[in-house]
Image (tube, rainbow, N blue to C red; front, side, top):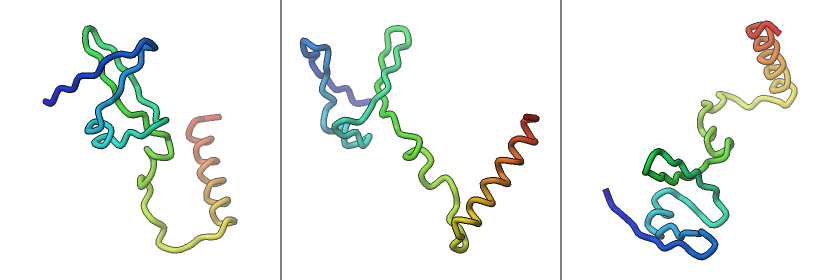
Length: 86
């Protein structure tokens, strides 16, 4: 485990070392989560829902129209309602 040190500014800000920012893909204006557990503080990048879901779905085998997409979404929504008993 590598250990980095950073000082705290009068405003309570710290600078993440360049190596850490590069490794985790953290850029200016990105958000980070700060977890406190006992005496341990962990800083992790926060990914947007779009970033998190990128590549989750398989590629379509063919192009579909907006109408087909709307029909598929409506059918899935109806199935969700039936399953959830709403």
